Image (cartoon, rainbow, N blue to C red; front, side):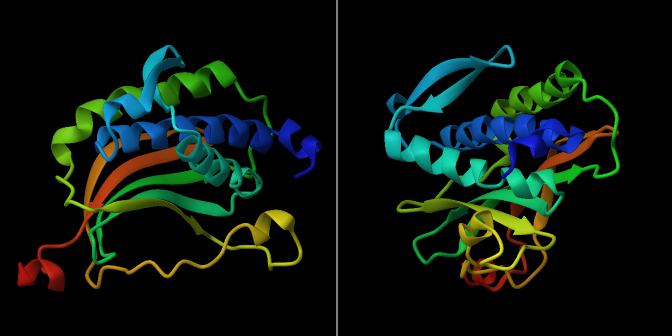
Length: 207
């Protein structure tokens, strides 16, 4: 990605948003208790106490996945970024979804302090959203998945080649959606919500 792209309003928004997503996704993983608390260290970000992964591979996975989205968020190609938790049959049991809308027509100066103030509220809201979440089964796994509005063809961009189609199992019925937090401003719209399988989902009916 050309550095001059980051000097546009959309580039500035994308840079702040990617940094925020890395912290927020780490917070989600910490919240779900997949790893011992000792696998994380407390840090301060946007004047909020958050958690950072101590394990280099975990930290690198989150950083690389989210940082790889920067050019696509900049161009408005990313619709959603999800943290998906699976049972031992690889069926999703819970999704934390960040729905993004970077205004491609916005051409004014980005007030970074205002943007960070709005994003900060998501980090405050996340820890208190735990009662809305599901208890995860044993031997579960998780992954970061991005949903694109459109994607450059492989071969036209090194960034595009990093992302491959997922073979993740999908729910057959529309999920139950539980809102956590949303913001709407001229440069950026962002929603955070949970998705759970519908009560009429086949797997749920069998249980």
